[in-house]
Length: 269
Image 1 (cartoon, helix red, strand yellow):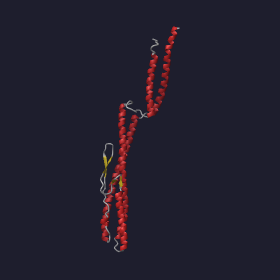
Image 2 (cartoon, rainbow, N blue to C red):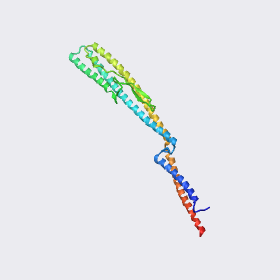
Image 3 (tube, rainbow, N blue to C red):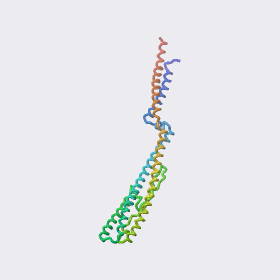
């Protein structure tokens, strides 16, 4: 029944236009943010899962940073150890020179001064093998527990506690017997140093492997998060164009429906 009080056609057209506008706003938000799930209103369960995944990603980043710091500390210790190993070659050569009992007093004094200087240099390397307040090579340190994953598990970086070469125990070399004793001490020190370098190298490999694992896991979680909450922009772009056409048609439908009551005027002419 035609009526000037209730325009049924216009009300129906408004209903569909309102639904189209709501859907268009949703699609525009997805295109603007790049996210299919930007808030709990979009998809409460997916938003909750995504928030947890974002927290995990930040935790993986923190764990990777801790591992990288531990790696640098171990690399500093290894670098110092390798430098000391090379310097020990010069120390040993100098001791062998001083085993010659035919040396003059002046020559022996010069050699002794040179030897003391090299020993002090080696000891300085041991003391300076430090990064961020931690020395994994020198004596008096402790093992370092490094966060390895987001479950707070740890990797132990072993402190090697390599004792320094004591200038007092080496003392002055005045005979081949003195030189032999010093060479024995140097051999023991070199053995400790080689063991320390081997263990530091093993710890470094473990740190490298764990760092790579954490990074790969973080990348995998990022991919999963993207699949869960990211918008398919190609799909949303096509959908937006379709909604724009529907919106224009809805506006035209309302215009047509609003013209219907005008036809009633013709009944009273």
